[in-house]
Image (tube, rainbow, N blue to C red; front, side, top):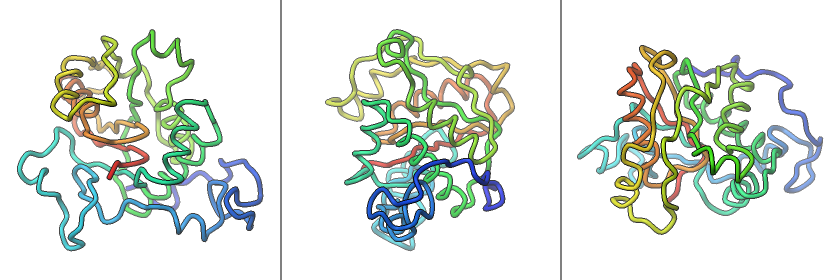
Length: 233
């Protein structure tokens, strides 16, 4: 399991004052009070990280009816308020400090919830033309910083996107699934027989993780988890 001893000490280098309230920093550039006040994604379904209204439940009705093709999902934060701003700063403005902050907050969540450590962290791939246009893959930045924080191996070449899919923003869940069908491939030499975790910024309908999970299963992955920083409500 990912435990408190796994967090690499001193990997975060930043200001000594909270970026929110200027109190002394506790973690990820924030003070202890501001960390506690974040919209942590609890309670949540262990299978898809959907917010649960029933604190006694462990899985949401959707996963009980038709579970996704991965073992479990760990999404640290709810995609609202400050988290939206940080994710957008990373994704659209290449804010590396936002990547480090979000990755460490995710690492703290993974420790607290005793997530089993994967052998490989696999960032959600971008199509090469999209990667050239953007200049970076935000999922790879998160995987790299998570790997350094938790001493896990990031493997960006273990999976690739085969085609440039249409923008998913305005699509329904069913349309997203259709849009991404057959969009990924995975390298059996890297993933066969291994426990892997897909890393991405936000889990919404799960269509991208669903399609990538299918490719990883086909390549022989032994277990697949989803590690996304945030979960949409």
